[in-house]
Amino acid sequence: MMQRGPSAPGVRCMRRSLVLAAAIALMATAASAHTGEAAGSGFLTGFLHPILGWDHVAAMVAVGLWGAFLGPPAICCCR
Image 1 (cartoon, rainbow, N blue to C red):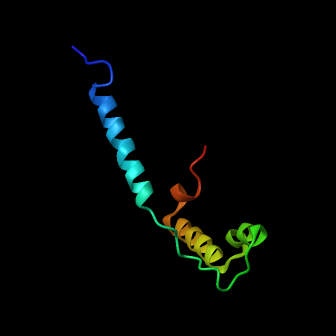
Image 2: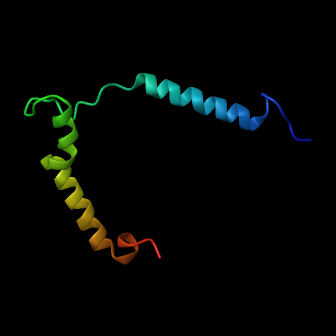
Image 3: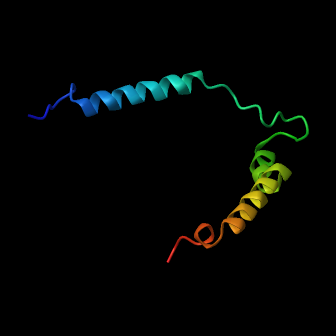
């Protein structure tokens, strides 16, 4: 017979997963990848950095080259 209600195995697993995710989220610290020393501050700077920042541009070029080296399955997945 299948259990139902709050003590069912699926509910306990989901509850355990949510508690674990909440604990990990509470332990997270602020990212210190961009310290703000070389850039200004404000909304416009933060908005444009992923588009014009050299580190983001270099990462996207690297991903594009990687996809080109992997071949057709990595380039086009839609038919």
